[in-house]
Length: 200
Image 1: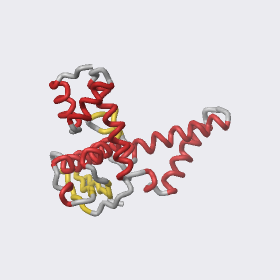
Image 2: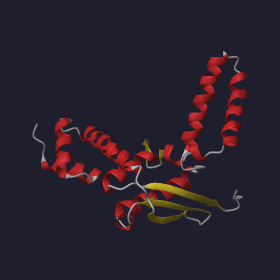
Image 3: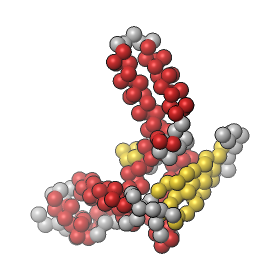
Image 4: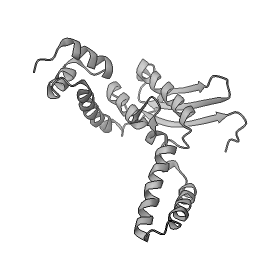
């Protein structure tokens, strides 16, 4: 199928991917731009996965102060080189992640950072809720695991739905930037301050 230059240009602008890759993706998806974006993301994410083992020691510290100055975030985002740290895409990712932390209040970057005590306390709450429903034991276990997964999605930054597109996880946003910039990118840590709140 012949793909119009306008369609290729639009896909390039929306994904930041090279012209030939855009053209091929549009051919494979019969000119469907949304399917082409999905295809490029799948290809990009596989490239991003290969880069995840590389060390990321450069980067930037990002801050976000919510209007009214009662809520603020400091976030450290790392990459492999100072060159990438200064790119517009990296800077934009850092700002978006800081806003995500401000808006969605995650507890940690990834689920592995949650303490065993927090996870067990949540599990116990869900067990008590489920047991009061008089369901069989194996069903109760599935309910507990399902609720725990929901807890992870709400409280782990990379698993949260992205505030600007809830069909995309924050992790997908990071991986798309990794694929585009060609370097491993790691959200190292963040702190969220809310006026009058105790900092634990």
